[in-house]
Length: 237
Image (cartoon, rainbow, N blue to C red; front, side):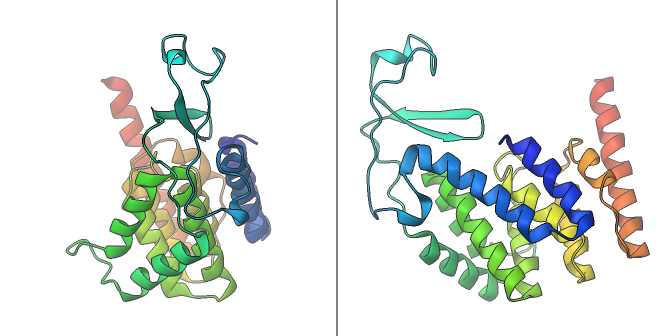
């Protein structure tokens, strides 16, 4: 299932109270993508190295076909690196999740300090986008299951520290899911993530989500208006 379709599914689920199920659907999609390269995400052999033989011409252009490559796939894009580079020396997702949660719980999460959680997640993304997104999604589901608002807000802070494209689609999925949480701070931080990302694409997501809190609704409207103004300026240039 395409990432954009999954996010639209989550927008609808956000208003109907089926957020956790929708988040799990997105995670399963990421797992499905990872299975094509790494095998089942719950059964990694750590540490392991995968080398995929020369891709067919339908996958990459003829010029690239001349050498063996390691190909990692997320969504509809391909990241290609020479096969002598070990790209998936991946740790157990459960251990990575525990490490990420530890950093979030012990970090001073504000703009004036360097977040160890952000740095750690950056290191995971450098190894594998898919693996990093699985770790984020596991941490978020743990936060939801335990109703840990501090962890939820920490995750929202961390994902908003990355560029929109870097955490797509799980970052946007998490933010959409958090907008209708009972905790107003979490809802505000979820909207703030879209404000930080500054992507007009988020207008569609935000406009479809109904929120109960008048204050959150007002903030959401303000962010939508800001994104529309940004979009108009881009078109003018």
